[in-house]
Image (cartoon, rainbow, N blue to C red; front, side):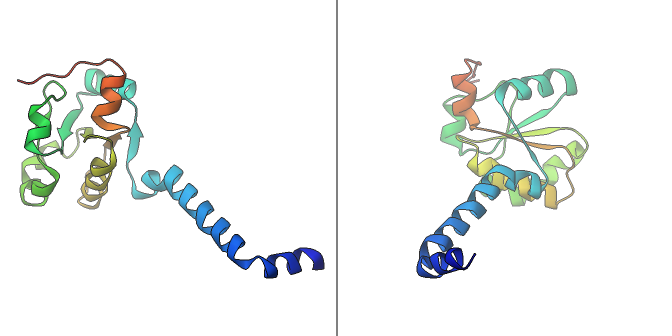
Length: 141
């Protein structure tokens, strides 16, 4: 045991880096659950849309949305969501799937919706890129 403690004290920087790495790994794996929303893959999203009447909320900017989006998705850019949150009030009890390009921006919005009392909040893991990789359709209408 003494040898281990000596080793740790001589390699303190390495052990600090290990601790930071482990914390980051934990947050990456469980951060969304700690914030109260669930990640879903494209297949799970399709299931929520078809069976639970989930609302798809696309939080990308207008030019990204116009280049292709999920059919019947509602578009509210992340930058405008705080001002337009009242538009979602009647959807409070409906499952909401948040979509962006890669799943990062929509993860931030998911946390925001949970803070405002929305219960069934989901984030499309991998965003539109994962949707396209699953060969699911997009529309430009």
